[in-house]
Length: 175
Image (cartoon, rainbow, N blue to C red; front, side, top):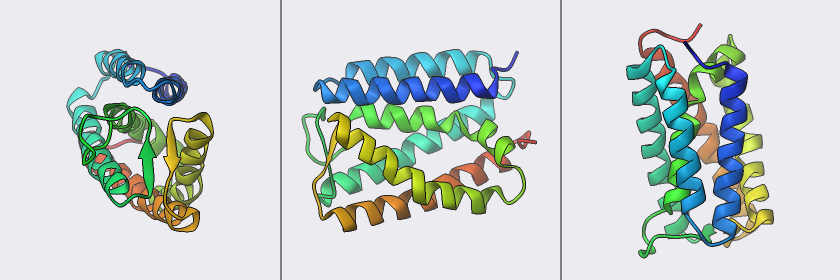
């Protein structure tokens, strides 16, 4: 039995909050635990486990690469980090993994022209999520605010429709 799309969205928001508050306290553990719990519950109930798994892993990979680039370029700093400065912290990778699980219900919700809508949503809500994370103390915009937020907008305007397109191409495609 599939999980309600609205429960998936609410669960993802709970993961976001656990990740942000945990990181603000200097710990990766709350975010990792919340991400794993969310993924376990939603994937166990998924009628399309293979497609969801591929999407989740793709999202995590995009997140690891993107966040590591943001970190290494000095645009974003993270409070709860790995022992190495070159790699994004586990809590934000866990957040990207959980984000991947929202792709199927998001594709259905956005309907026609979903990629264009995803570009616009990414442009606006990607940077807003980092602004909220900054305000909560989970991360810090360490570069020029204009350069950092423009980079975040571009990242999300690319990543969101790419992940939606990937999920739409996996069997069975979202309705």
